[in-house]
Image (cartoon, rainbow, N blue to C red; front, side):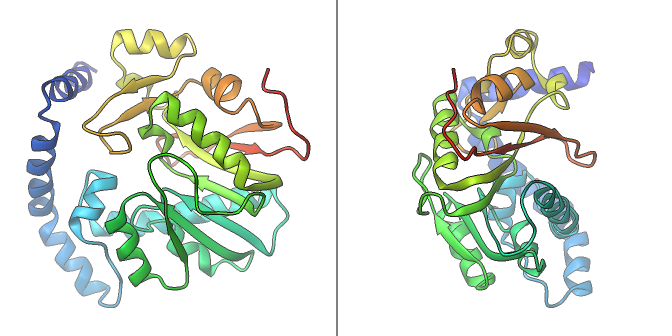
Length: 274
């Protein structure tokens, strides 16, 4: 526990001194070196597999391991699709991943017969360019840090995101959740992950006090949306504030993932958040 707290203090110092960017560049080189042998072996074992450039993979995962990128994507995608099936009628679904990164998850959705159309969005132009070239069967769309999405209103059965709200300011939380409600069909669902009870041990004492009181805890990084910009969410914040405009909110047990997963349904009629 002391080692964990020390790490959090070091990260805080890197943020306030403006040295996080330099530390990131050093870590990228170290991760490439550390994983070089296993990555070469994995490429030999899977000669036809499309794998992202290191800088794109590191940008979203803080790591450079190809085996982990691919082997975790398929079971995580299956879990999300099975979760979708519990809340929306199976078959002919239009599904969008917001914040797709290098398609760790979304590349597997096109194999599921319950899904008719797959869209994916990200704000990183380099990531989108690589994904468009690599996975032409998916419609990739570039968005900005702030809304809107280039998607019609009331057009999606499901929008999901994994570790996206975890890197946004409080203002962007509310702007994006309103945008998600806009693009979902009435009765459509939002699936999203949040830093909650599973990761609250990473919080410093004053952050934990805010977390327990129902406030959003934000750690500013070099820039919003990056992996070093962090947000933590208590269940009270997610249910009573962020998702208050949805008619039905459910916490889904995802044992193998380190964040909390929530499902929220857009009501057929407007809901008064108050």
